[in-house]
Every structure is written in structure tokens, then in C-alpha cells.
Amino acid sequence: MRFFKFLNESAIRLLFAVFTTVASVPLASLAEPGHGIAMYGEPALPEGFSHLPYARPDAPKGGTIRLAEPGSFDSLKPWVLAGNPVWAVGIHVPETLMFRSIDEPFTLYGLLAESVEAAPDRSWVEFTLRPEARFSDGSPVTVEDVMWSYETLATQGHPRYHGAWAKVASMEQTGPRQVRFTFTEPDRELAMLMGMRPILKKAQWEGRDFSQSGLEVPIGSGAYVVAHVDPGRSITFRRNPDYWGKDLPVNRGLHNFDTIRYDYFSDANAMFEAFKAGEIDLWRELVAKRWEQNFDFPAVRDGRVVKSEIPHGRPSGIIGLVMNMRNPLFQDWRVRQAMIEAFNFRFVNMTLTGGEDARITSYFSNSDLGMDHGPATGREAGLLAPFADELPPGTIEGYNLPEGGERMLDRAGISRALGLLEDAGWTVDDSGTLRDASGQPFRFEILLNQSGSAMRTAAETRQIVDIFTQSLRNIGVTPTVTLLDSAQYIERTNNYQFDMTWFERGLSLSPGNEQLIYWGADGMDQPGSRNWMGMDSPAAEAMIRHMLSAGDEQDFLAATRALDRILTAGRYVIPVSYSRISRLAHKSDLRYPDRIPLYGDWPGFLPETWWNEEKK
Image 1 (cartoon, rainbow, N blue to C red):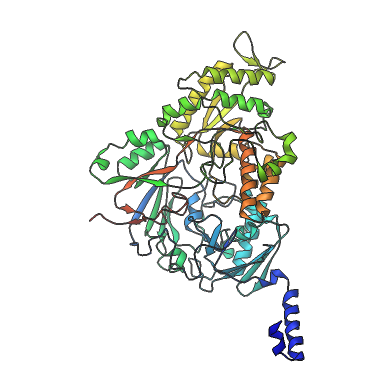
Image 2 (image 1 turned 90 degrees about the vertical axis):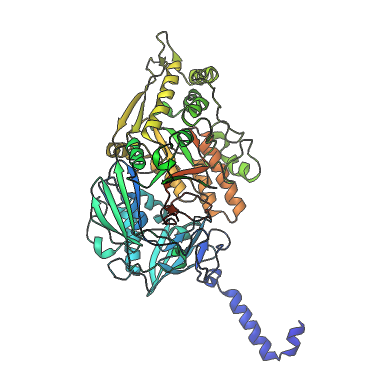
């Protein structure tokens, strides 16, 4: 009040008028544009930062890196459901409005967008395009391209784009270079998701059925263009010398190779032999036992190939055999637990990895997002309480996987499996066959991709399944194992035509709307969703909604841990092991920065941060 005694009456009235006006301004209008956006708090890197902390800004440019992929391809459109696409096209050719840092959970920095502005309650987000942004053909990236891309991906693109778009109330151009998205419901992540859609050139695809696969080379604004395609066999990307964004802070030290080539091989064995022969430059070893035993060949002994171990701090995700509950056989949790009991993890792990890799104990294990295996407490317990009657045993009380035995026959596990099956109405008859009360045998198919997967070779998954099927014979079950080529396998899994199959879902430190694609009830019938187990869990969807609307990090952690409990105690997947490091054998001329990002060997690390440098 001492301040006011120096003002005359008119000045005081004017001052109070100003205060009253400011106080009446809606909070949403007080938002300011920024160089980045984080889920909670502020981005770690300040405005004007010089480069990403995990990139070497003076990394040499030039050279070629040759990489390998299993299987084949028949499409250059990884944004649609149809076809078997080259996923790398989506990595190297188009760009997004914002850039995801793999050193910070839930943080984005400007890429095509020079700034981002969001309401304090995240009810809307607005992006301002950089005036210098260009497609590889020299044409400018416009708001029109942005709006067309978002709407087309949402209506004709892969189902993974549909969920978030359903929460967009409006998309509008608010200035020459501005586009604003307004949302229908509270969801803090939506403001970030709107920055992560690929921006494609409207003029290339307008008036055509975008949902169809094809080999037409897409035009993007990214650092690389498609230089050569040998359908089904190889694809080569060339660094664009006129790339518009090469000097942006988020790009300094990235995109160092002049050429990136991907060759496709029939299976992992052929890939490894090509690596040993020097035809490809890098091998990602997935099995600890092979890492110790299989790398004594001439190129390693004379130093042309070196072995690198890349640590990471991301969640384990889930890897193993998923049971499809669209088949009534697996709808009873006791049956699913019996399958888990019959799977002798300890013996499998000793056989394949020498026991060096840890078992996946929950979907978010190896991170702060993972559940505690004891009883739920505090906020977690409060979130789960309304669903207590519908959750399987162990969700709230605590759940642990069986350890298994050192010998192939785990008698204790088999005994527990038989007890659970008997409780569920299945018994072994005099012929040694497991049957229900009507005499129907317990039969199902295990579907496998003969090209393997991202995390396991075909030989490894087959070995795991062979040990499992031998164990199942002890409870009167003999499943059929079917191997398909990649195209047939994708077709069947996209349409959920399997009983059990190999399943891999990498999970990040920033889970959000994609969790609905993985576990949401909409994926029960929608082809191409990631909900392979056929989950229909109101409890899981409620936890995801809590994650998305959490007002602070502690609420978010509680909701994520509660979701982890629901997924793990749901017994949908028979988990195997994971590694806390990535094992990369590579040509000695290939280098990477000393500073490893939080996510480690994750999309955005290889080949983006690597470079070619001959040994001195």
C-alpha cells in the first residue's frame, strides 16, 4: 500500500483498471511460443542451444553405411496398412513438425516448426512453420501440406494414426505459417503428438487413393532422398546436398553418411554370413551366448570389425508368445497362467543366452515406470480399487512370474499348470490328451515368421517354441507350429488369424496415446491394430486416460504403474528375456559419439549419430 500513496487518484484508477484487465484474460491466451515442448515442466535444452548433447557437431561427413533387414518388401509407403513396406523410408525421407530427443522422455524441439505454442491446459496447440523449410524438389513446405498430411493419414493411413485424430475438434490455419489444433478432451500428450506426424507433399498424392501400397518414391523434406530401389531386395538413400535443415541445432552432427543402403535377406543366418563376409557393415546381436561365442572370425581377429556394447535406460517392453483371446480357448486367465507355468523360462534362458539376460518381469520393468511386485499402495491402489472385482488375481495383491527349473522338465511348473487347467475344466484322459468336459481336445496353432523379428532370429524363436511344445506334451497338449513368409505372416497377424504367435512391443519412457493402440478395445476388431492379445479391459483404458490427463509427474507414474499391473497380471504374454545393453558388431571405421543418449540404441541413434572415420 505504501506504493499507492505516491499516486494521484486518476493514476490509481488507471492502475487498477490494468490489473483488472490482466486478471480477466483467460489463461489460454497467455501462452507464448517456444522452441520446444515437454510433457511436464520445460525442455532441458534452452532456446538457442547449439546441438543435441548426444550428437558430435563436428562429425565428419561422407561415406556409406550398409545395413541389413530380414525378409522382403513391396511398398515404399510405411504410413498405410496395405503391403510390406520399407520402414526406413519413414525414417529418412519425410520430417515432422517437431524433433523427438532420445535423451529426454516426453520432450520435443522444433524441426519443420520454428516454434510451438500451447494452452496451459493443453486444450490447443499451434505450430509456426519455418519459412525456409523445403521439400527435396525445392518446393516450400506449407500449412496446406501439413493439414493435408494430417487429414489423409487419419482417414486413409495406418490405424495407428486414427486414435489421436479422433480427439481433434478442429484444425485451422491461423496465419501464413501457423496451424492450430484444438482438442475435444483433456489429454496433455495430444499437443506433442500433433508435432510428430510425417509431413508429405500434397501435390504428389492429392486425388489418389493414398491407402494403397506402391513403389512410387515419396517426396519428403528430410536429409535423404531415395536414390535406388531394387524391389524386394535393396533400397539406397542418398544425402540431399541441398537439404534445407542441415544447420538446425537439432541436426548438427546428425545425418553424416552420404549413402545409406539396406539389403534384404531371406533369414538371419544369411544376414550374419553377409556380415562376416564384409557385405554389410553392422550386426546387432540379440543373444548374449552368441555374442561370446560367434565372433571369432578373421575380420574380428584382425580389427576390421569391432564389438560395441551400448547401455540404455528404457523399459524392457514385452517380448514373448502372445495368446489371442479372440480364441475362446485363452479367455480364462487360469488357462493363460497354465501356459506360463508350462513355459520353463530358466531352462530356455540357459539354453539360448547362457542365463546372462534378465527375464522381463513386467511391461515397464527396468524403469521407474515399472510396477512394484508387492501389493499396490497409495495412488496406484486408489486408481485400481474401482476395478477390483474384474481384475485377475495378483493385479492389486502383487504378481510374480514362475522361475522355472534348470532341467527341461520342470515338474513343479507342470503340476501347477495341470491344477489350473483342472480348475478351468480341462483334464488329461487315459490317452494322455487334455480335454474339456465335452471331450474336445485342447488344440491351438503357434504362428511364426520364417524371417524372424526385430528382436529374435527365426532360428531362435523356433528353438524357444520347440522347447515349449515339448513341455506342453507333459500336460497333454500338442500344438501345431506354422511357419509363414513375411507377407503371409503380416496378412494373418493384421487380421488376428492366429492362436499364439511371437510378440514384441518396445515401450518408451514416454508412454501415451499409443497405449490405446496397443491395449485398447477398439483393436479387438480393427485390422492392423497392435492389440494382438484381444484385450477388452475397461481398467486398462481408465489407467491410460489417467496417464494422459495427469496433472503432475507423480500422478502420471501412479497411472503407468497401475497399467503395468493390469497388463502383467492379465497373463496375456509368456515373457522371455531382454538385455540392458545393445550388442553391436560393426566395421571399425564406423564411429559414434562418446555421450550415449538415455534411450541408447533406439531409433534416432543409428545411423543418425554415427559417422565414417578411418582408423589412424
